[in-house]
Length: 147
Ligand SMILES: O=c1[nH]c(=O)n([C@H]2C[C@H](O)[C@@H](COP(=O)(O)O)O2)cc1CO
Image (tube, rainbow, N blue to C red; front, side, top):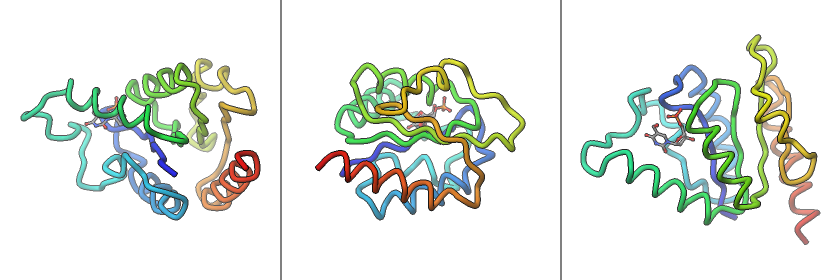
């Protein structure tokens, strides 16, 4: 299974440790195309785009989105890039799972929460200590519905 993980980069790296935990768990279900998003070495300047430029990052990521079987996004830290990826993924009719932490004190964008339909697009409020069990629940349901 190919998994596309979305998390904030230029929107801010406050949650990178959590992204790492999520990606490690996702790797037990399949190959995570965007492992770099969880790298502690990646700063909010983004990947070193000097050689190929932002267009290469964009085109590669849209291509990975097309290839992916499922999209998992940590959406607590607002990020234009993550919002864009989710919009493109909806258009591609991908299965999408968004994770949001209400303890952040933020309110999730209506364009994300309002897109939830409980089936293809799922938004789940959670706290950090339950992240692994939530992913287990999501992937076991995904397996049941895709056989
Ligand atoms: O260097 C990058 N590499 C990259 O893969 N992205 C993608 C993956 C992330 O899920 C998302 C983050 O967007 P943003 O940088 O606007 O927070 O965009 C974004 C950047 C920088 O914008």
